[in-house]
Length: 315
Ligand code: TXA
Ligand code: MG
Image (cartoon, rainbow, N blue to C red; front, side, top):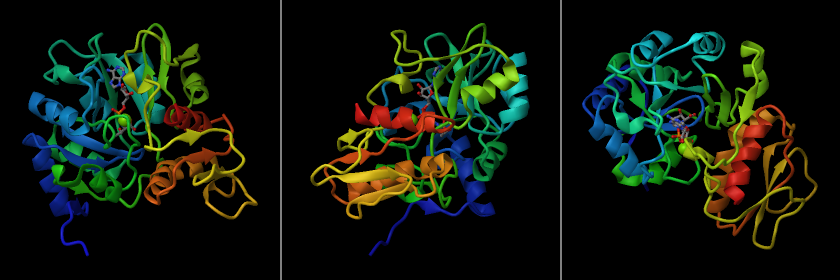
């Protein structure tokens, strides 16, 4: 029996409480439409430091800062024509922009990459937007998981990940997309640093400019590109047809084998598979399986982001 929980419903009273906690420098968990965020006041060095230490995240891996609108983003970030065009189409939503920080901005320098650029996004989630508006501050929030582990998509998983070290988690049944946002470097050359639900093709339609996809290149400004990342804690094997001994098989589409099988999407929907991926990887590990084999997943649309994450999980 459980007597104690840090999970709070996002009602009016708790949203006000959460906003006060953020403003006063506390770190809490808030859902977004992609995954849960480990959130703190982006103006405060102490909040940002707390996020790094709770996550055990290396200091050279910068954090995404969340805003309620392009207007509030514009107060801190040097926005450009590309941002305006993309934001019209994709924000609020799962697209993160990397841009220069304004000289006069009071945002903590600890969230920036080594080129003094900031990653920013407007999340499409009522709860997160409510806290952004009520607290009146930009919110730094990496995914709510320990460094190099799987992101969390349910409040119960956030609670398991941090235990009593994290005293306030705003609830949401399950984040709808289930995979982290697309990270896009704007400027003279456009680069996708992390694939997500907003694809290269979708971005190209808006900007009509060549977009590079960056994979583990030498000059890492976005350590989400580090190969070892998103690890469920047991070996992961790609493009498999059956489970290994004492292992489970994670299946995209239909499957005849009956034992030790978990379905990402029986109807072969990539969107559904994305939203189930982290839940199932966590569940298989918790059930005590010794490895996870995964069947082939089409490399189109959000399938590219799924393959990116499971490739890293397998390395
Ligand atoms: O969907 C998401 O993006 C979630 C939700 C909570 O918004 N956040 C998230 O944050 O996934 P995080 O910290 O787990 O991943 C952010 C990625 C990392 O790969 C990080 O290296 C990169 O974005 N990043 C953050 N700031 C950056 C910057 N200034 N320049 C380059 N890359 C940056
Ligand atoms: Mg992360």
